[in-house]
Length: 621
Image (cartoon, rainbow, N blue to C red; front, side, top):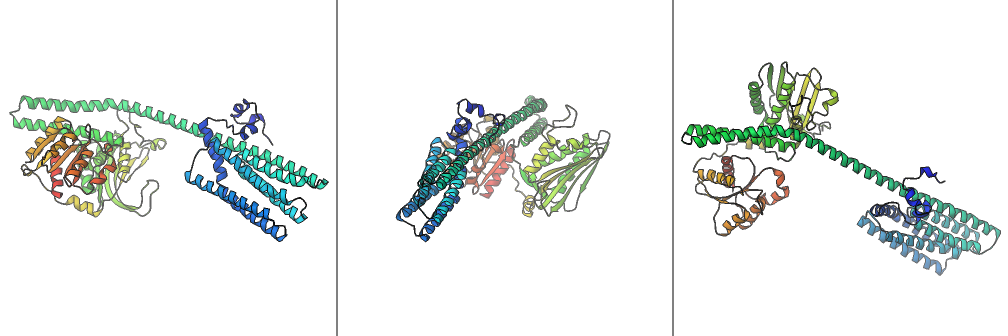
């Protein structure tokens, strides 16, 4: 039963423009789509048939064996039946071979040539099975005629069902098989056989109608799926563009505040440098201004780290942290920074434990959470910061935490709380409940990113008028990590370099000269190179070096490539790689350095710390 014109898909006008019925257009492989999409639909047609090939071939071979056995039992088995069987088995093997090739290739598309091949295969199968009624029906005993009729009808229906996705192949199979049966039925020229011929014709007509209707539905469903995919892709692209626009707008609003902070830092550096330049003979004043410059650099570094952490492009500088000591320090800092009318409570549970995380990031998160709590209590209240240890016996799906021991840092206030309708949104980047100009909406987003990047989670509980509790869950550090953190460290002072030669490679002359001076102050003999090519030229010119400090981003050869090249010439050379953020360096680049004395440091890094770290690496080599 055919649908009305109004029920036909939107692609029907495309077909009708060719002045052919829809079923005929589809039967002739005229798919209403562009060539790429039509190739995918043809691939689906072929896969729908190929998927059933093993089952169909197994059933067909079984039918052929049963047929031979029946003919033998009835005493009519002849040489031509054996020849037919061999031809059919060879055809079945060919189909199985094609099935294996298609399965291994996993081709998502198919060409018109593949469809034509399927049509020829369908015709070949129909012709092979048509031989049985044509050669065995006429003049045979009634049991043989009945059995051949059943086999023929079953094979005709099964083949039509399997080959239906490619209607021309199914019709070629059915019509050729029917032609063999019609030939057999017309031989006796009796009324009974003529009636059976009429029934067979109507049966074939119904099969052909169903084949074409099923193929039309098959192709329509694939066209609908393709349309849905296009609409989903367009919607996702629009959402991504919208999110990008919103993000860029928010970043633009944030840029003003960042520029203000950076300009303040530059003002401090400029003013202190000018004062040092005017009064170089006053060592006390020079030292004081140098400390101001150092503090300004630390402030700039903190801003950079927070922005990189928000963008998820920064690497965490993990170290072992005593949770109890950290909370005590943060609590003391808050007591001086926040003050009345807010009361600070510091609670440290026995055995609060250790965590392995970025100390600066964790401190920043706790301070940001405390600041949020303060802002939520304009009329005063209680702010509680605490640390404790707990063991999760079972995975926490809500937090996404596996079983194990965790240290949780909690910041709780008795402020205004958060409405339930927006509680789930407060961790979104740039979403803030504070008045315009009083918050960037980055604090909770960065806290969540830090916790997840450290292997933990962030949990928020709030009740309007009762306050908010934010908990940062972090995995507890292993005992070995704690011991290494509390082990005494080697102290370095002037002259400890003991004449060791170090090569400093950086394309920025100010950074290079600053590092050279710092190493020379520690007793090292430091030489500089402006890029990797110059460094290798120094080394190839018999320059003896005991250590290497190199920047990552340099013209030509980057720092990691330079370290690999130098290790090829001088294996085991201690090396330090300086980089702005870890996303510059692919993780695979470090695999070859696992057995080498090597350390990765992140800018900005005080020159004295670079010296100390290289000396430590040299001590391990």
